[in-house]
Length: 156
Image 1 (cartoon, helix red, strand yellow):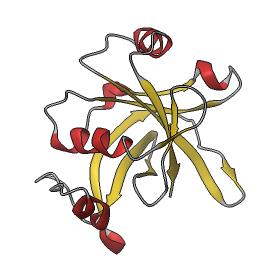
Image 2 (cartoon, one colour):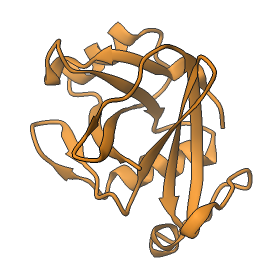
Image 3 (cartoon, one colour):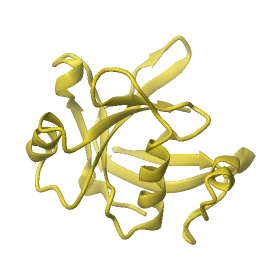
Image 4 (tube, helix red, strand yellow):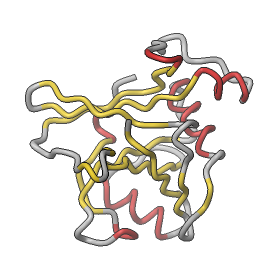
């Protein structure tokens, strides 16, 4: 469930060079059940700008945590949404507070602190793609070519 090589602190081109945030990539063809389930839940999003999807906070969400110099992001979904989708939680998934199930966790060493606005934490961005990606530039190129989409997840 921990694949930290696919987490970045960066600006995302469609949102502009000033908007630095957390970006995760998720592979729609992954063998990891939690990652596949997260990708499946992306289909429940609503398109805003072309190729950019917004997810309802009760379908899929992100949680930030920090241990020393490591920032972790955990993707969680409510048990009720998994049941609605007829999906089983990954065997390695832990069910936490109020029925939220952990789908995947990524972390990296950084001093970046997610911003807070109006009492809410900064959203996490997901780029879904098929197959391995060698670099962040390749990931953005796939988005520009229409081979991937960006989802905006609320953070709890």
